[in-house]
Structures are given as structure tokens and as C-alpha cells.
Image (cartoon, rainbow, N blue to C red):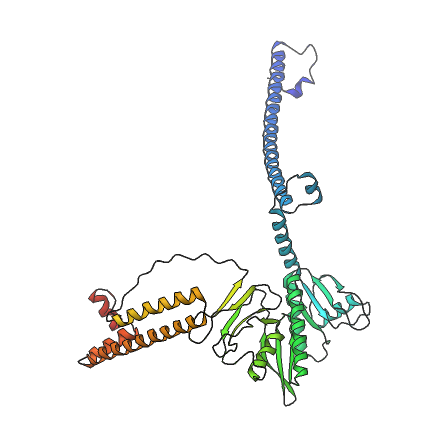
Amino acid sequence: MAAIRDLFAMTKDDLNKETKKDFIRMVLAAKNAHVKSNASGNNNVQTALSALTECIQSLQKEIGKLKENMESVHKILPSEVNHATIAHPDPNSEVMCKALQSVLVGEKLKSEMVISNVEEDGKDAEFISRLCNQINFKVVLNGCVRLGEKTNSQRRPLKVTFQTEFDARAFRSRCEQNRRASDDFPNIRIRSCRTPTEQKKFAQSLEIAKDLNKAAQDNDAKYSFSVRDNAEIWKFEKTDGEWRILEVFSIWSGHILITGDLNFHMDDSADRDANKLKALISSFGLEQHVKQSTHRSGHILDIVITRSDDPLVSSVIAEDRGFPDHVPVFIETVLDKPQARKKNGIIQMLSGTMTVNEQIREAKQGRRRAERRWRGSQLQVDKEIFIEHRHEVNKLIDVSKRDHYRNLITSCSDSKQLFRVLNQLLGWKREAQPPEKTPLVLAEMFSS
């Protein structure tokens, strides 16, 4: 069979029949080889196109999910366009928006620090740079800005924003370490930024501390009150020329309702303890609501205290209901009455309890009749009759109890029975029994 290179050297006369057949076979073989190569190339292209199509479809799915997420975010954070396009927005979206915004603001404030007592010379960035070099703290800041309006009397605080919360905390920690270690550290104060709620609480603490300091100056007391960065109020006392801390106060933002029974008369202007309590109540912005006498002697011994600016208590009435010494105080509040929980319990009757005799039963019936008569007439004479019946019933019950307990104790024949009776009367629990376990387990417990 002739080769391809031999065809170019042959003449027309040299081509015989066999040579022509060989030439035809080579042309057909070359054509078939070209067709196969094209077919394999097409298969590769088809495979690549299929992979590209699958990738495009997956990207379209991801884009669809992103669109759904963006729609949900737009519902949570309604913009001006959303307000224009949505005719009936979700009523909870505003609440969720405020909650989300407060969280974002809180996270941003964690990466900010406020520096006080920095000189205002227009070179705040240079001051922060020198301070970072002094404490060997290398970090990129997002910026610094002065807070409030500029005045000639005092320097405005300088707010420094860091990239992360960790950088802000590290900066403050480095400054405190250098303050304690070096005397050349600038006379500045560094604190974290406050949220609007924390700032309001801090302002309230300032007002309270101001009133407390004024009251201390009026009474010539050697006390001083200072507000810390966390809105706590510290009370200091000056002894031997030095101030030492006595107490720490903190503001509670919820309702306050204080009730109790005192051992002095709140309405007595000559009572020293009463005057001290009144001054303390007033200094903390509280109010005492009981104005009527709450004792038989005609004085105020029971108190109800709330915030002076809190409408928690709508009315306080001291009404005589026939009790021995104190008059009950009825308080009406604006709070809803909580729903009582249903409790399932077991009432255990004690053995050897006192029995009510016929004399006590008749005295109780007479007391109830006298009380109903006084409730209906509201006459003073009927009230005094009811009080006499009540005293008689109480006296009979006391005598019966003494006789009952005396009989129980005298009937004991030995000390063991006496202690058993005393345990029942005093409500003491019985001795603990060994746990219900097998003898082998108990033996191992005692041996270990």
C-alpha cells in the first residue's frame, strides 16, 4: 500500500488501479477520523453546556431565596417606598423595627468609648494618636467626635469609635493599666457609651444625688453623694480628713410599694425618728400616703410608700373594722388583680386538738349577732357592745386552750410520751427514717 508521501512523487502514468484504490481508502479513513473527532468534540461541548445550565439553575434558586429574605427584611424595616406601596402594613412591624433598631444601636454603642476632660484645641485625632502610642495600642479607629454644644465653661466629652467591641474594651483596659503604672498619664476619664435608657437613668441619679447633697448641707452633715458611670449613687462620709464610702444606692425603674408597721408615730412632729424617716422618704422622691390614724391611740403607725411621680396607688383608706389595736388600711391600686392559681393540697388534722365547748359556742353566736347589729346601725353604742362580746370570746378561748394543754402535759406518764406530745403541739417533724433499700445496700452505705 502506497504511503501518503509517495503520492506527491507519482506521475499520472504511475497511478495504476491498485494505487487508486489505496488512495480512495486513505481518503475515506481520513474522513472517518475527522467525523469521529468532531463527534467527540461535540460530546465535550454538550457536557460543558449541561454543567453550565445546572450552575445557572442553582444560581437562580439562590437569587430567589435572597429575594424572599429581602422582602421579609423590608417588612421588618419599612422604608418610605414600603409605606407607599403597602396599603395595610403589619401592625407588629413597627414594634419589631424598634426592637431591631435598639439591638443594632446597642451593638454599635459597645464599640464606642467616651473620654472626658480632654482639652478642646481642634486636635482630637492627634490626641487619640498620642494616647494610643503611649499605651502601646495599635489599632485603626473609625473616628472621633465631640458630644454636645460647645461652651466656654466646660470641655465637651470626646466620643471615640472603634472597629469592634473588643478593640474598645482593650483600649479602656490599657488606659487603666497605664494610669495606675505611670504618673504621666493624662488626667482623663474613660467610660462606655450609654443607651438612651441608661442616659435617662443616669440623669435621674444626678437629680437624686443633687437633692441628697443639698439636704446634707442644710443639716450640716458630713456626708457627700456621688454618681458613678453605671448610675449608682455612692454615699461618702468624711472622717479624719478623708472620705470613705458608706453605702451604694441604685435606681429601680419599676413600681415601688412599701408597707409596714412602725414603732413610732409618723404624725408626731416632735418625734425625732419620724422626722428622720420623713426626710429620707422625701430625699428619695417617695411619698407616704396614709394620712388617717391607724391605731386606737389616734396616731399613724402604719405606712404606705410609693414613688411621688408614680400613680400606682389611687386611694388609701384607714377604716375601723373592730380589730383590737390597729385599724386596717385598704389600698386601691391601678394594677390588675392577678389570676389566682388553683392549688391542690392535703389538709392534715392534728390529733388531740382542742374541742369547742358549749359556752364558747354560745359566746361566738352572741358576738356574730352583735356584729350584725353594729354593721346595720353604725352606732357607737352597738360597736362597743360588739367589742365587749369579742373580748369575752377571746378570753374564753384562751382559758380553754390553757386547760387543754395543761391536761395533755399532766396526763403524760413518762418523758417519752411528754416529748411526743410536745412535738405534736409545736409541729416538729418526726425523725427521718432510713431509705427504703435492700439490707446489702444499707450495709455498704454505713461501711463506706
